[in-house]
Length: 223
Image (cartoon, rainbow, N blue to C red; front, side, top):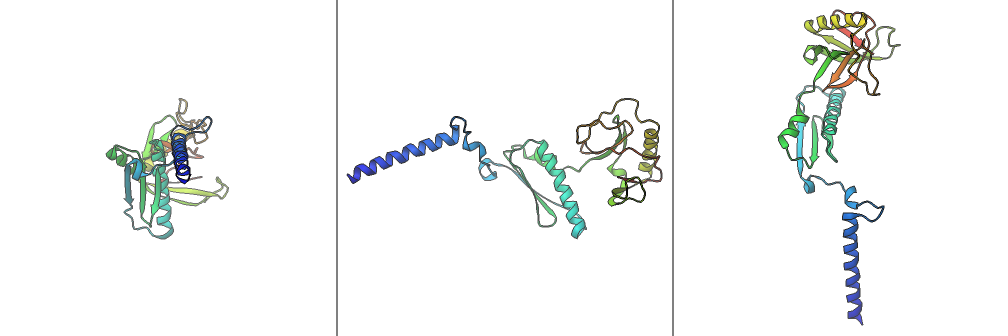
């Protein structure tokens, strides 16, 4: 009798095991397969593991701000790659760890996430004004005038070439802007004004301020 019970128990266990396997792989009716909810890491799915280290003398809150900004840029690049379950995390103070499960082309992935961020200023029709090489300094601050209502602004300082190009661009904006419709949309999917100076990071619009005056001298604040 005991032997018979053991045989029956073994059969039940086998049936339950097979049923569980089928449910995991194929699902059951409206229930989607469990495997679809399992996040496969690099140890199972394979992929690319990269650690980037910042070369900077910054410390404290300044370094922390830079690292978080860099992490945000990398996350956007990874999202554009369409990778499932990626990991982008700050390690220590100067390192960022990136895990890309399932990625096969290591060189292409590293090139995509490790390239220098491309900052560009254009007119609303896409006409190039200046780029990151023309920016001497940019930092957060508070408004020096009444245009932003005393709120926070970004203070930008340009080199001589950038200052000249920016003055000419703001002059054009004050004269009515571009003669064709704007080619850019903001993060609300709204077409930006033809009178805008469009600021792009890696080709994505991050801001599109409209100048309130012709800006000369190579310094401006963006509210």
